[in-house]
Picture 1 (tube, rainbow, N blue to C red):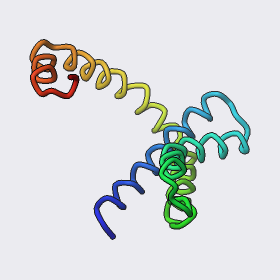
Picture 2 (picture 1 turned 90 degrees about the horizontal axis):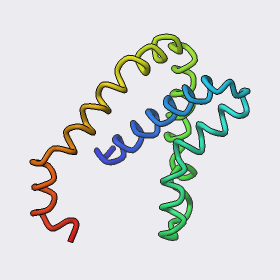
Picture 3 (picture 1 turned 90 degrees about the vertical axis):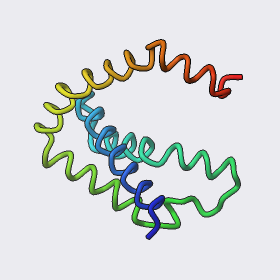
Amino acid sequence: MELLSIIAIISVFVFSISATLQSIQKRYDMFGIAFVTFVTSVGGGTVRDLLLGCHPLFWMEDPTFVIAILTGVFSTFVFKRKMLILKQTKQPDSAKKFIEYMQTDEVKKIISTSGYLN
């Protein structure tokens, strides 16, 4: 298995955990949780494949992605309390630090001289 495939499966797994936590906090029923989780996990890649004309879609071609989604949902239900505590305590600090870092003059200078915005 290639490194890119492994990264794609891990990202689908992480997105499924994130979507399941959000759905649980919004008190969706099981169908709502399954729908939101599936769309969140493979939605971006599905749109990419449709725009590029790739058929069959990546998650239909390889069942590992669906297994990763189901594993993410199951593990979220098993470790729900710990994940909710982790989500509430760790994420805002890291996101705040990242935003502060991206607003520094040094980063702005690097981006402006790199030519990516021109």
